[in-house]
Image (cartoon, rainbow over all chains, first blue to last red):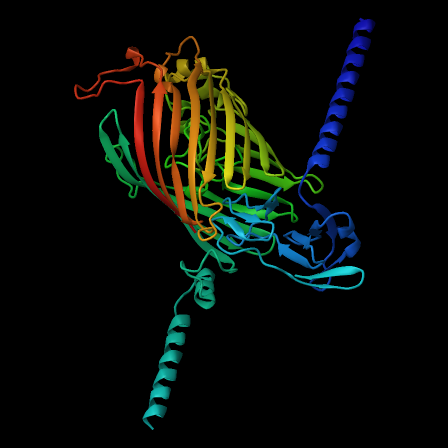
Length: 144
Length: 419
């Protein structure tokens, strides 16, 4: 009886370890092959968001998640060292957009945008709004 | 002098018009429309808080076996959305099928119906997560959540996503939607009212058991969840549904010898799909399976001859011929081919009757021309092959009935729009 319970305990422990290892491996795999931009969490002050320019040393694109704000912002560093900031709000019915490998997708009615914010598929008809940006020696300031 | 009089008259009439406008009893929404200039012409593209938009489709279909052609305004759908504030919004879709609503049996097989496809409140928790509550379409399969005619090839919606996944599948409930911050992984989890097994009917799968927001049984409930992952030009998705189908109370259930409770007489549905698109070439594939282990109990109680399991799968390849045309880059001319296979009585209980016509294969080939992204002109041919008809299931056939053939083909022409 005691042997049985010890055996089942060992079995259950092994199963849990295996499940944990699998989950960890899958998560690591998904993180390593994910193709959407890196993400950065920040706050909004006086309708402005400050993002350190150093963020773009490792990746040309960043998804900015402002706290207490309904939408994310996709910031792209262009080849001429200029920046563009797109508000990830669908122009059809103001739904949040999902970043995909090749652009942005609205799960509400299926609108699709490319990385520059142009409409690839309707029902949206207008491209994504470009936010005003300015740069300081260390930061990128986005006006929302 | 005459100019002055004219100016006074014009100013006076303007003032009277404005007074008349505000003397009427206007709702806040009406005032918003009047003061923002939002109307059905510019709605959907404005940033107003109330948005009106919609979609629709019409088709012509010729059945080569029956030698009959039919045409119908398949659906006209009106969306109305309103943003109360940055955290709370309302979304709705009201649908009219087959142009007008008439008493049962009058529509010649094209019964008119007016219904709400969606009507729910959305509560934004943050920029990546939100909760929906009301009547909504859960994320199951490819078409259910994204069913606009400009966004799928073929005049008809894929048959697997009509007969096995009963799109557009909407129920009442609460759903949690979100996206991981560090991984491009989207997830959903929802609790819905359950299906009604008494309404299941032979050959229609789960379709007739849907409540679609009308007096749904809520003694029984369902849970659905999905995971969606984006990698380069791919999208991978898996989703599942598990729910009870008997919403009757204990006394009624006992009288029918049926088990009762939240997940009694459960239905399980699982699906996985993959989509890919690059340089004008796109491909998609889906596989789905439905299991209804207690089908025998339902057949015994209601004599509706339902199966124990169903499956369906399809794969589609399409290419936009205008992809490389610099002059016509805003237009699309997608040629496509899709192969579908499904079996609605993959396994049947001992008290079921096998129906070979529910084991089907379809090959669809045609084009979708989009002169602008929100207008589609479609044409295709569908070739169908099924199993044999079971004569036991043909009761009192009409003398004018065309004999059933296991091979048939259909010619389809259609238009669709969204805005």
